[in-house]
Structure formats: structure tokens, C-alpha cells
Picture 1 (cartoon, rainbow, N blue to C red):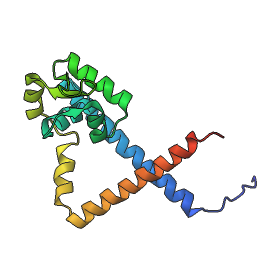
Picture 2: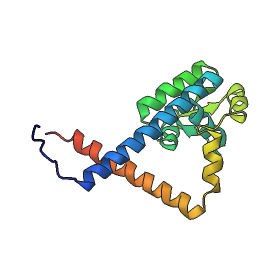
Picture 3: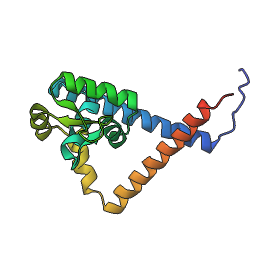
Length: 162
């Protein structure tokens, strides 16, 4: 019988790996739902989110403002707005006061589509989540935001010159 070396149990590593596994599971479920939404609506989840943001906006929004609202980078949001524009859902309109500013607005087709938007998360989740006590929902959100912030710290550290 070969000697196998026992590796000491490190609860911190085990916990972080468990968190990673749960994040992968969540990501997979969101991906599957997003693919179904795309098949049903012809639009990707980011496009649907942008339509919703534009439909809910009280004021004209720049491309950058839409990007901040859906938490996507400028290059990504620019591509999404380009595709929404090509599809006839949105249009870019120059500010009449400051011609350097460009707003994104829904077209009539985009506004109609926004009224019928499916939810980006499945309805089963929404119903079950809504049934949880407010304190528990708030705690979950706070924990997820903290995980996202920790991941940003890791990303920023990775980007530092080594």
C-alpha cells in the first residue's frame, strides 16, 4: 500500500472553493435562462436590460449612463446600443444644446417591445425570492455585493504590473 500524504484541511480554502462552486452554478442557471430568453425574444439579456432601463428612465440617457445602470463597460454597451439601433429598437439623438452629447432613446418599436419584456430572471425565482422576509433578501443582496467587491479587488490586483 502506497503512502499517501495527508493534506491538512484548510477551512478557508474549502469555503472559498464552495463559494466558487455556488457562483458557477448560479452562472450556469443564468446562462441557460438567458439563452431561452434570446430564443423567445430575439434579444440577448443585456439588450433586454438596456431596453428596460431606457423604458423606465425619466430623462434622456447617454450611452454611458445606460452602461452604468446595467453595470457594463463602455465598449460593451456601445455594441449593445449599436445592435438595438440596427434592430430598430433604439436610436441615438444628439443633444440640441451640447452637440457633443448623444442620448439613446427607444423607438416606437422599442417602447412596444419594452412593454412586453420577459423578466431577466425566471419567474419561479422571483416568486420564491419575494416570499423571503425582507431582512433575508437584504442580507443576501449585501452578501452578493460583498462577493462582487472582493472579486473586483482580485481583478484589480491581477491587473497591477508584476
